[in-house]
Image (cartoon, rainbow, N blue to C red; front, side, top):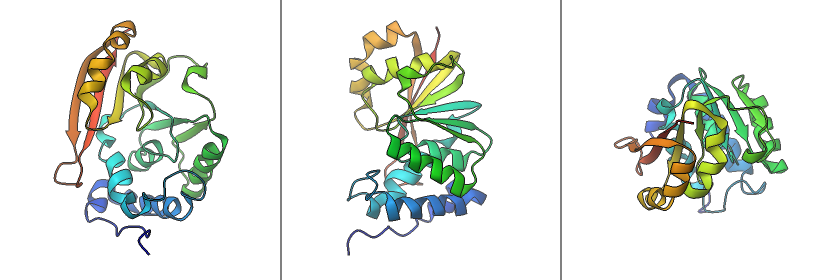
Length: 209
């Protein structure tokens, strides 16, 4: 078999609380349809909970107000965060039609009233700098990500990216973009230790202009 959805980790209930049933429904839907719809690779289903769902959800405390998820894809992290944080408004920005169809289906199926799906590239956003926080996960390196995402954040707003183990090198490589877009107070937080097998790195920064 080898490609079955992994058993729900014990940590899932602790992370999602009374939203766990929605998290289960989304995870099951993604496991059942994600590969055939080109949302996740064939190796991801057996580690869907640990590597993707919980990896996204443990970052939930970093979000507040109005949030944009750029390159939302299968809904990682945007849909997962919207499940975990019903008090926060999420706009999922995704250019590929088949992905926005999936995202819209999930929003409807799960009854998520705090999510808007927009089919466009981040640089096509034309509704102003309205977001308190802008996030992205597994989209691009920081030097590419900052020009795409910083212009969406209000002045004084924050960036909160879910990044991999090479985040320090990405920060060094993005020095020019950091200066150009007025990105300050860069910090890397390791979250989920003792909760998930592979902790999540969240890079936070402030957009000053």
